Length: 381
Image (cartoon, rainbow, N blue to C red; front, side):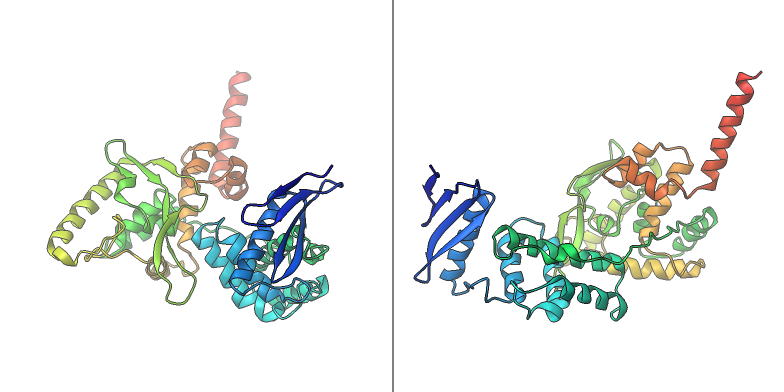
C-alpha cells in the first residue's frame, strides 16, 4: 500500500508504487501535484509553491519563462543554502548574462540548440573567457536540474551542450631578482608595504590578507589562522563584508619570525593611529591592515597599488595572485614538502598543488638530478 502522510502546513505526500514521491495540495483553488525521487524534494516543491501562491507569485511551469524560474530558484533553493557571496555571484550572472539571452524562453520548451547558441555567442561575440562560460553554464545547469527534479521539465537541455575548451594558464611567479626589486621598491614609502610583504611570504589570497583580523594572529605561537576574507556584494554600490574563506575551512600557518615582527610593528602603529583618531576610528572588523583612520583596505585598491609597483620592476603583466604563486614556488624550491605547501595554501589535495606547481622550477629538477647522482656515486663507491 502506498504510504500517505499529511504534509506539515497543508497538503499530503505519498510514496507511489514505482518508488517515487508525490505531494498534493490546493493552489489557487486547483489541486496540484509535485513529483520527485525523494520525499524531501516534493515537500520542498509543494511548500515553495504554497509560499509563492501566498505571495501572489505562483506560476504554472508550462506557462512560465526561464527568467521567472531563475528568480524562484535563486530565492528558494540557492539563497538558503550557499554563502552570500555565492548567491550574489549567481544572481548577478543570471541577471546580466542568462536572462537577456534566454530569459523569455518558456522553461518547458527551452532546448539545447538555444543554449548552445548562447554559449557560442558568449565566446565569439562577447569574448568571455571559457572558464567564465563554464561558470555561467554551471548556474544554468543547476537551475534546470532543480526543475527536472521537480518534474517541471522532462530532461535537462544543458546536458547536451558543448563548452569551449579551457586552456591552462601558465603561472608567472616573480623571479628571485624580481622579488628583490619588489621588496626594495615597496620600502620607499609604499603605504601597503606590510600588506604586500605578508602576502608574499604567506601565500594568502587578496581577500584573505585584506580580511585578516587580529584575533587570527597568534604572536606567542608565531602563527596566523586564515579563516575569513573581505568581500564585496556584486550589485552596484554593494557593501563590503567579512565572509568565510573560499574553501570554508580555516587553515593555520606557522610563519617566519620576520613576518611576526612585521605584524608586531603594524600593531604598534595601528594603536598609535587609533589614539590619534579617537572617536573617528573606524576599524569595525578589527582588521590588521587598515588606513590611518582604521578603514579597511579594499581588495581592488590593493590590486591597483600592486600593479603600479609591479610595472616599475618590469612586470606589468603580474597579478596580485602572482604573489601567492611566488610564495608556493619559493617554498618548494627552498625544500618545503608538497603536503606542507598544500596545507599552507588551503588546497583541497596535494595532487592539485603538484598539478599547479610541480612543473615550474628548473632549480628543483637540477637539485633532484644532483641527489640521484650523489646516491649513484654512494652505492657504487
